[in-house]
Length: 491
Ligand code: TYD
Ligand code: MG
Image (cartoon, helix red, strand yellow):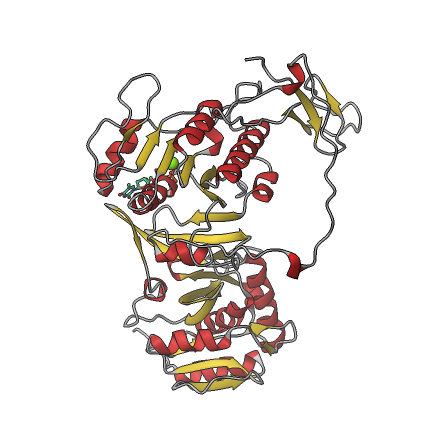
């Protein structure tokens, strides 16, 4: 087959050159040239093939453009999508209520966080009802099989083009196929001939398209491989899960265009030394974003956590001064989280501030409000704030909880362990209202909380929980510390 031609295109100005330059000859920007194939990869009906149309001698004249006219929404035929369950409710919720056939889902995450484990478990569930192809580009068939056995998954067999052993082993899941392959062309052919309903590419950074000289994982390779896979998947209505690695900066490695190409982008994250793993949606064409699925890594794979609040709520019997409980909301999911603050005299010229699971700049802002409006001399104190389990709480509704935890630590007082604190703190020291109050209060009630300190003026449902409305941070601190008790001074 004739090789397709590639060229280097500047990502800033669009200028192209046949050769790589560190600096764009046209706009003089540095490191902006990325390799691209001149002709797009197309698949033919007799197996997916990469065809370079430009290299063929006979070139057909382009077909005349078809007349297309604009339609109103009502004129467009309904196409009700029949979602199907992945077998994991946590994943279904993050996807917006199940898997959409023919959709493209990108799953990003740090190495070793459990992406392959999660997908192997998902395909195990799916292959009970559908034909599934798992392309394990990073691991050998034996490695995946070993892991599958540990997880209790029995793949049908390893599709291996070097041997005739395809699909040989007896299997409990006759429709789960493994393909240990990194060559894009072979993968496209296999997808085209097997025509699975669901396919997994683990991972996109390991795939290699031979017409490009760039190495696997480079921007050019990742982009070309994803678009070729996407074209075939849309044409054959194959639902694709694509695994993508995350760079040091936290974005999915490869161009941002990867995230634009796919329908849904999920991030799988967690602390390496904690067992919980969070599946977050950051983009979803078929549902709400910022949904959260919670899993726990066990010795035999991932387990769903249907009630995550219990995971992030510390030991209720051993509440220390400086501990406050908030209700964070991730998408439509409320999670009760314990915050801990520690303030102590500093031995540095500028005091130390540190956050775990909370936004650093928000802490600085809250400390400034406490100092200015309440006169707490925090500029002479170190301040450390952490959420239990290291859960990332980025939303402003946690502000009031942070303020109360810091004030409680400063005064060495306890906050009543059965009180939750919900509210945003303004720069003037006022408490601002937050969204989804009803969901938050219901979750607190479900977990046995008796009181809630909330912003004044917000409407609340009639629930069996004592509401303490506050309009200023100072009032909230008085209310929170009054319901707690003085810590006995240890002699
Ligand atoms: P893996 O799925 O290989 O991560 P990724 O594909 O994101 O790189 O997960 C590997 C980690 O998960 C590894 O450090 C061990 C751990 N693990 C368990 O704790 N229990 C298990 O049952 C499995 C399969 C893995
Ligand atoms: Mg992996």
